[in-house]
Length: 269
Image 1 (cartoon, rainbow, N blue to C red):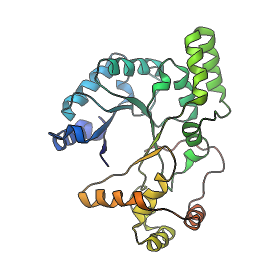
Image 2 (tube, rainbow, N blue to C red; image 1 turned 180 degrees about the vertical axis):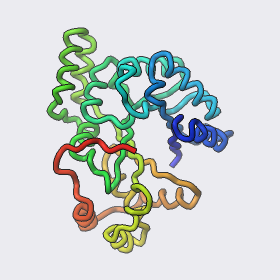
Image 3 (tube, rainbow, N blue to C red; image 1 turned 60 degrees about the vertical axis):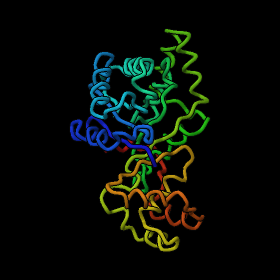
């Protein structure tokens, strides 16, 4: 319960300043995650964005630095190279991505140093289970799914262009990274007012938020980052770690919130 997630986008840097004030004198007790805009992800702009975040957060090193989402420019490989240089310079300890789908991850892992990606932060909750069809198993298991046309084309080009990148492309077959689930409690109060969740919550003498969070956390290699606006929310979230959902609970949840049966667009906020 010591991870703090923020981004330069939140309040145009204001959120990072709030975090910086809150953790002043307690840096060694927290794990800081922040994210860079795609337009700041080039080899020249990412170091500048990182320095601005460091100043706002009032820290010397970011524990985990993410690309907030992907755009056509700058090239993804250039962003990876910029992350690697920031890590070598001691500005960040780890780097990762956010809102990447399977084909994005395939391409990322085809690059030299792409396999060093520490996480993929994606939208995941009972109302948004789209990642379960292919992205979640792709990231958290050692089994490579059937490659997409785009991913295969990228790997073929890499093999033709560089033996070292070809080896990196082949290594992703046995790689996995944890998923960081944002908005695990859904949006607004809609999810938490669901009748099925209320029934299961009564069965366990817990809140619907705790049941929803427990459901996300039951997945191996999944980290949840729920919002917590006060100490009570933090305490309530912490109590989600000792709930064990039964087969009956999970069956009722699946009926109320059916898992995906086909590939769907990756949801984002």
